[in-house]
Length: 74
Image (cartoon, rainbow, N blue to C red; front, side, top):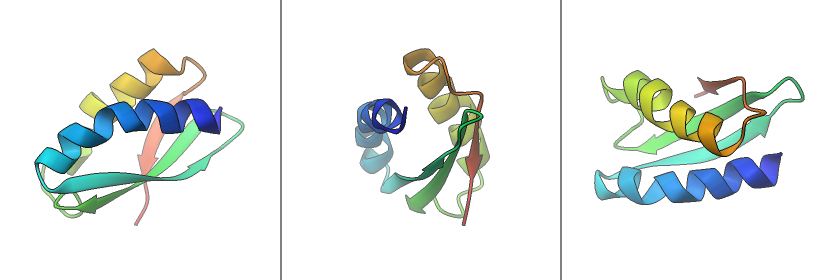
C-alpha cells in the first residue's frame, strides 16, 4: 500500500510545490492511517489542516481505497 500512497502523493506534489510547499510520506500503518509531514510553506501555514483533510486526504482515499485517514506529524 505504501507504493500506492507514494504514487498518489506524486500527483499532488506539483500543486503544493507551486505554492512553495511539499509533503513527505512518514508512515503507512496496517490500519490504513497515513502519516505525512508537510514541508516548506505548508509547514505552519494556517490553511495546512484544510489542505491535509480536504485536499490530500480526499485524493489519497480516491486513489487508494485502503486509506482510512491522514494525519500530520511534525
